[in-house]
Length: 417
Image 1 (tube, helix red, strand yellow):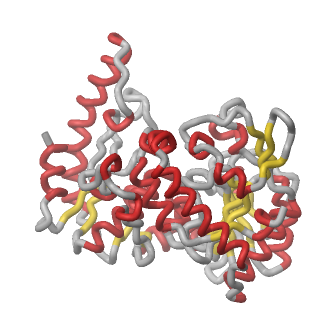
Image 2: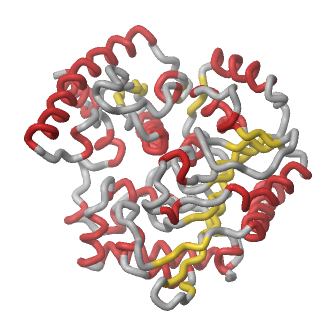
């Protein structure tokens, strides 16, 4: 019942409130949804109310990815009414309890399969993606609008900032220190060594880059919940997964505080995007669904090889391969991805730093690759067989709108080898 009421409020153009229930168990999806919702609400002069699911986590078999993500933000300079938010959240959670209990029982007893969006509230998601207004099977590619995420204002509550500033002093990180956040996806956290292992990378290949940053007056903090052991120690390097200081708000605060972010295509990358941080994406394996977003952003793609004949496939060739190779829902079995070497990462980092601090512009090769990439994406959409693969994606419209909004580039090291 409360779901329906909220959906009616969201669909009312005269309402001053907009309710959003970000995906509770995935920090990447939730951060992206909050970011897109902020733009959506700001354009319509609405105030965002974030719905957080928190009833009976163990009983209902889910886990909140990060509590602070749903509780500790000021969005578009509009403060949260705690009592009102709590009132709405409780009623949503009551309905969620009965809905999810029914679904879990039906799945267990009758082996019924439900679509993903039935397991959790999907409030506000269709609106921010544009699903209610756009039918992809009947619309032209050129008429699909990109997202506009350039002027979002997402800040952490002042009292939480003060709490975190005190906490990081115990790590020997001062408020004026230059800080870089680094996150490298590996199989230790998800325990997925045998599933899409090509998404994972070795933190030890980043040691040269870490040394370079430290030599240039940056402090580096490795992010994540757990991870592979790194064979490196320095007073200005902080292995956050193995520190006792970690907590949810500090996870968010450190990314909000950093000068820039270096990371692989995984969850908390979208926290950095949410705070408009300059981003160097390393060890990329997805082109169309997680390309570099802002003009200042850069990316380094893994080298691609055919497993059959060991032949290297250039990034240009890979971009033109069937869309099934670019769908993150599908696992790729006939290609192998060689992760970035220490030299690749350091070379890309130096280019990225020059972009940030010396205003280096993309070269012709980088500009042409991005242009060709977007043209190829349109070609996929206009080809009926490839289009069907695109339409089968979860969040297909969001994927298209996000790619169209991307303005960043691959580092030259990815295009010259």
